[in-house]
Image 1 (tube, rainbow, N blue to C red):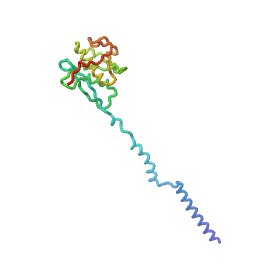
Image 2: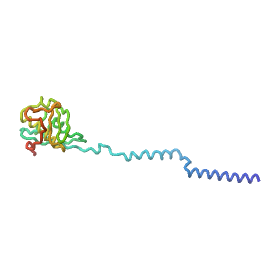
Image 3: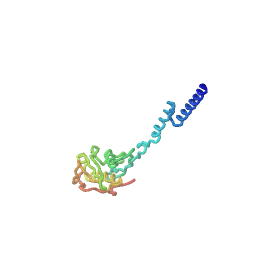
Image 4: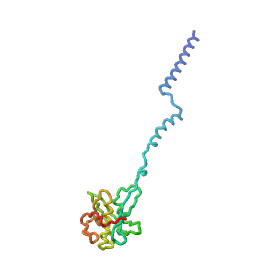
Length: 199
């Protein structure tokens, strides 16, 4: 009788162990081997890399500017196109910088003193306020024609930009009666198409 009881007990014991293992497997208590765990945890971390946005540099577009320089006879202003690679957050400042740098064509003449510094430029209510260093006056070559071509080189170039209809000149932060000695610069100056000749 003792042996029979021992066999029944052993049978139930083995059945209990089997049920325990099956229950643990179904409830997820059985741990995966370390390698499989590593693969499951690493997968989600790689997903954001595939969905990362494009770099801002890939969306940059070149800026196209139209500048006006004097012809060799100082009769007209002629356009010269420039392409600026990358974004031009402040195109007005870029225009002035390119005018100071001078023309690329040998048939055109510079209209700005090479040592002048753009102190500041901003746009308000359709007017571009352009503040130059004192060299705008002291290093200018003078004369009424030089005065006209310098001022309207700036005005006509800036008014090519959307939102700019006129230009107010300042020297060292101040509005002057005639910044270059001849043309009135106390008020904003508007574009003059009659000075432009196009090829």
